Length: 146
Image (cartoon, rainbow, N blue to C red; front, top):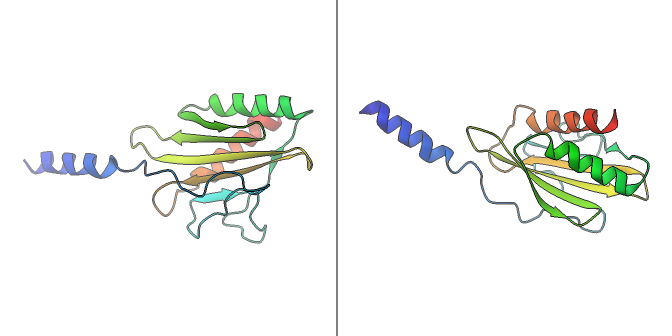
């Protein structure tokens, strides 16, 4: 009987792991939302001295259309992704982690003027992420820029 209670309690607790989408997401002028104080977020628009949150922007390919298409193909090919918003220069996806159902929000701003892609990847719930968001962005960089 104890094991059944533990299983149902675990399922109940984990069923809320997706959380609600943050209300501050989106592109404001040319800026993505800043990372919160918790270590479960990385952003290329964070001050480089903030080594916990800062990450280099992604590469820009020959032109905006080619960049956008390849970025979309790379992200969709990673699995567990859902495209939420696509307005040309701004792309917003969710990544759902299998088994536990944790959801991460990942945003991209294709900055044509500076020929870079800004990125922000953050967990919806919890405090730490064991480096998952940083690893995800680096995997995207590897596939996009090689």
